[in-house]
Amino acid sequence: MVSKLTKFFVLTAAAAALAGCSTSKHEPMPLVKITQAISADTVWSKSLSSADGFLVPAVYDDVVFAAGGKTLSRMNARSGEVEWSVSFDSPITAGVGSDGYVTAVGLEDGTLQVVDAEGKVSWSKKLTTDLASPPVVAQGLVIVRTLDTRVSAFEASSGDEEWIYQKNQPALTVRLPTGMLAHDTVLFVGQPNGHVVILDIPTGKAVFEFSIAQSKGITEVERLVDVVGYPAFSQDLVCAAAYQGAVTCIDSQNGQTRWSQPLDAVAGPAIDEDNVYGVAVNGEVKAFYRESGEERWTNKEMLYRRLSAPVVVPGAVAVGDAEGYVHLLSPRTGEEIGRLRLSGPVVTAAQPFSSGAIFQTSKGDVAYIATR
Image (tube, rainbow, N blue to C red):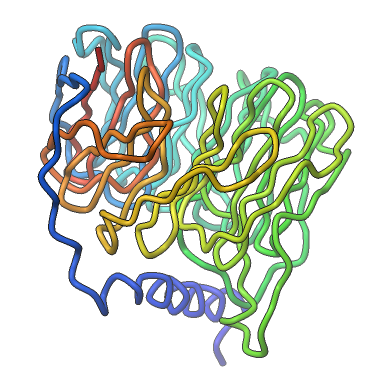
């Protein structure tokens, strides 16, 4: 008999294949010639081991924590100099989460590993299943979400379990990059049912839940509306996006929905002072006016190039693609105004830093790209 968990993994893999079907049926759109209207430079690039899965660097002040293969490294964010590295017995498949002092990653064998500011292992914990997203370190806790939808919090210094939050496990889910977002004392967690739940970090209690998208269709696949990527927070606005769903923004002060627009999202949104940006499964990049939600522009010049989540950098919004290109788009028009290439596919979210962002390729290279 196939166990419930085994069935979950099989269906997850099937959903992942379905999620990628839009790209497998179409050749990536050839790159168009552009006028380089913004200068973008690779300030530094460091080669780590290959980054299997959805590895995301963590940036705290002037420090970058990045993982590749079995190794976690701490680097100076301005120079790329490696300050320390620590290796584990199993490949790192989820991470990185850090508050600058405590850093956590998930291993292929289902173990959560936590290291201190000097790179020494503080404690480890065998989890119920693999991690579904990078850990979050906040309020003295290391918080993880596993594939069985369980969110667990451990005391950062000792590893003692503090609380568990879990909803019903879905039969089918999309295996796309996801993440949790901590802000002050609350944690935003996207759910496979198209909702975002807000947890009180000290207690793990749900304080609010809001809908991103509603299921439609007849089959389980058609009704998938998993929240993908990271929720985005900016001032009084919280936005999230769902696969086969929408991008929805709520008022962080009162929980009221500001607006919602249809979007078959492949990644979480990004927000700047004027716009909310989203990326669709087919490679469309869209900008919506921050206040009204009205569509401002759509860029269709990168269809089927398997784009990463958008990231706001000075003077542009950037997305990476499966050929390693980083595309810089005008926030006002959506026109591509800059482009450069990294060593391999960019599939995970870049992290804003100083004059640009920190990117990681699936080949394991970590690079700081700055605009001017």
